[in-house]
Length: 77
Image (cartoon, rainbow, N blue to C red):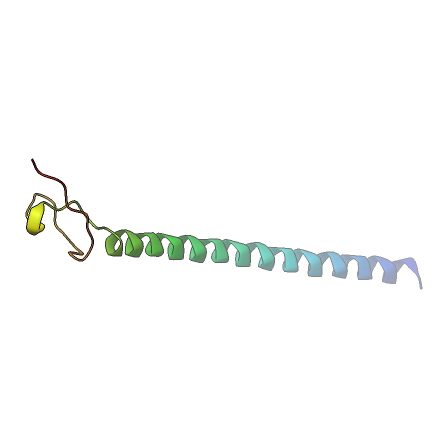
């Protein structure tokens, strides 16, 4: 092989590797955005669904009782 063909092959490999690196970086950024969005949505759902609140006796109080089956009432003297 002569030097011209070796140089051309080297340039082609560099171009291919740079395109692959660019695609990998973009894919990683998109994956990071998707995971952050999913975790944000999950935290919103969990905070809404797992909030119990503090209830007074028989469900009376300032806070809303979401799950009356739980024993989360505050002892009122």
